[in-house]
Image (cartoon, rainbow, N blue to C red; front, side):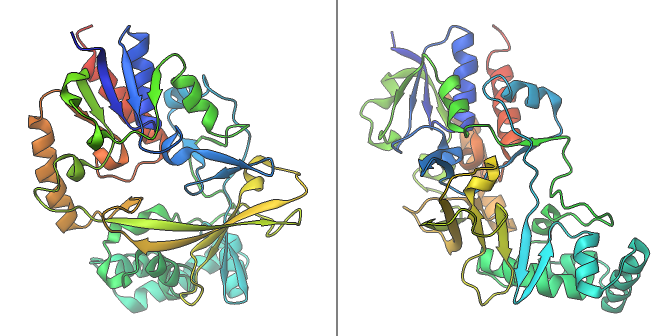
Length: 368
């Protein structure tokens, strides 16, 4: 008899959700993580009494009431609304692109005026079928918005020319003709009061967790549990035998500042190519903090290599084709379930991770 029903590799949101649901069904789970903490990339580190988002800003948002109700079992959310600001040279703009942005950029007041300028710029470009990110952006917002607010930021983020990036990336930036600085359109939004750690802690309550434990260094791993839930890199699981999937990585420079308020906003993007970091996060503003000091993180996008922390999959045709080959291997791997951002080689918002984990649970326990 094996000691556990499930060996869950990764104590992030997918792994923790699966473990919580499996435990409810009477299953015995062992959760391991190579890091020294649970929570994966939503982990918060307390610095000067401020919950610092150690792996980048995470704002929970969803239009799925079932997911919202589900996650509210584990914490209470505040009413934080994501309203980033963009700085281009000496100019400051609201994001997402809305009437505040257009008014500042062109000195106009009405949606009609803004649409007229954008439509004229789009018409002059005459792009019928966007072949890449640059053409997609230009066909959506015209030349001015693209040059000031998209081009430099995106090229820093990916360290690639916008002409060499797929068009779909830009769909994450909404365009609005209202004076509304709310970045997301979702019905529900907020930050857990007290940070994200409590969600994972409550999910994993009563479940054995081993930290600083690398799955690939485990001896006799096949003898530990009946099944494996793997949330690491799918290509690493198969020893990269079909090739290496590409990612983008992020480097953070954190500073503790002896002032109460550094930039007046949680998220400030720097959109010109010449500024080396993509954005500055001031963490206390996620929870309306009043601490005497503040903590900021400058984010630098970087190329990824094996051994680095993978953040964003590079979902171009080449990588997607390679992932499909790994996906076929995953389907043939007996007793192994793949999930999460790295296991599925897909950029997931947090609500989508929970949906994916719950869908996996339903499939796995459909006969119970």
